[in-house]
Length: 178
Image (cartoon, rainbow, N blue to C red; front, side, top):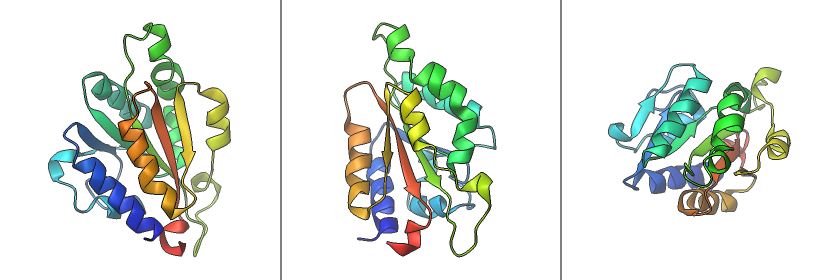
């Protein structure tokens, strides 16, 4: 299967889980290539957010603490950086500061923006995977560079029972190239 087909299959798999919800920008309304991977998902599972990245992550954490598994979608790493306070100081640390009392699972979906056929400039093509790995101890960062890694990675992110959330990094150029 192609890169895009594997992403679509993964989102369909997650949408069939009773406790999942997809939240973010261009989730319910068209706007990014990621939107196309959500076209067959029930409207009740989609929660559109305005451009308010930190609030989106705070909402995702709250939903996870209340039994949901949010798939929190940030179309670009450069946007996800704006939610770093919530990720680093709350989601990553909550299991430790609550002595294991809380371990909310959030699946964070982001992308390195496509450079081909048109380069969108530097504010859309950052890949901060290595930097985030250095900062986080309870959140795994997985780079999705090959189609065959996608479904297994999203399945693992959902099924994991180790108290960790997961950041899954997609590559916009691969939507049409692999």
